[in-house]
Length: 102
Image (cartoon, rainbow, N blue to C red; front, top):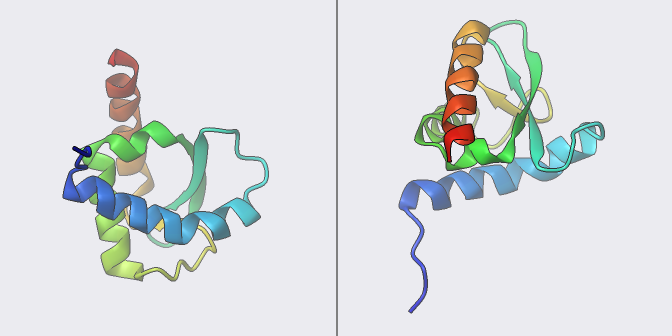
């Protein structure tokens, strides 16, 4: 009897796995348990976020949007999220609250 992961979680892990090696090579200053993402519509800004975000449906939605827009080729060389910077900052602050409550 194995543990079944939700389909969204499996898909998020596949997306992450394909882009993490490239992101890790470029982001040597990322602390353990975190990953670097690039956010913005025209001008991309780099954010370092905790891996715990990957378990959150809101972040998984962003990963799905990134896959739809970029496939698995990221213009910045790392995981690129196609949303406005202020939208991402708002989402990250909400995710910080959710991740801390657990």
